[in-house]
Every structure is written in structure tokens, then in C-alpha cells.
Length: 108
Image 1 (cartoon, helix red, strand yellow):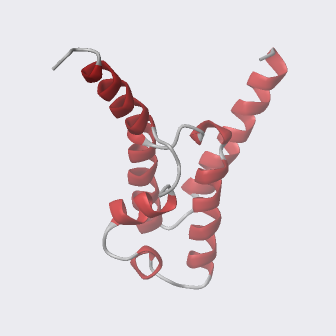
Image 2 (cartoon, rainbow, N blue to C red; image 1 turned 180 degrees about the vertical axis):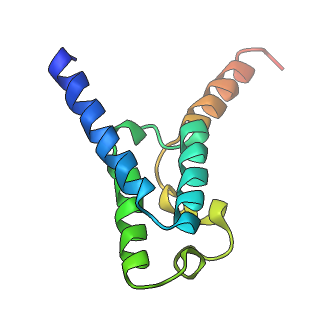
């Protein structure tokens, strides 16, 4: 990764953050919680930016349509976030797999 890639990545992230800040407050709160969750246990490929950008696209459209965030995602933010990554490996999955392989070698 060169300097240009780093600079471009920072520009893209700043543009993304600006889009999030432009969302209505209830949408921003939900987005922030989803982002925190994904950064803790989220999908392995979260760094490509498409998942979070897709959420912002979805939220921008909902806000433009005059819908509240709960009308879009329901009452359970965690269930909504989990549904988006249902078939995607997560860091938590990798961690569990590494624990499982360690337990097999212990001789039990």
C-alpha cells in the first residue's frame, strides 16, 4: 500500500463520515451503534467499505422518503446488523474456530 492509497482511503473515509453526519439524529445513532458492533465482531472484509456505505445509502433513502429509522430496520438494531452479515465470516467466527482447533489438540 503506497502513500497515494493511504491518502485516497482517508479522503473516502472523510466523505463517508460527512454523509453519516448529514443523516437525521436517529439514523446517526443507529448507524454509530451498527458501526461499533461491526468494528468489534463484524465481517472480515469490512475494510473494503461497501457494507457501511450500503447502510448509509439505505438510511439516506429512508430519510429522504420521510421514514423513521425504526420503520426501516425494526426495533432490534442487533438483529438488523446480524441479518446483513448472515453468511459472511466474522472475526468472532475466526476466533471461535481458532479456539476449537486448540481444544482438539489438548487431548481433552
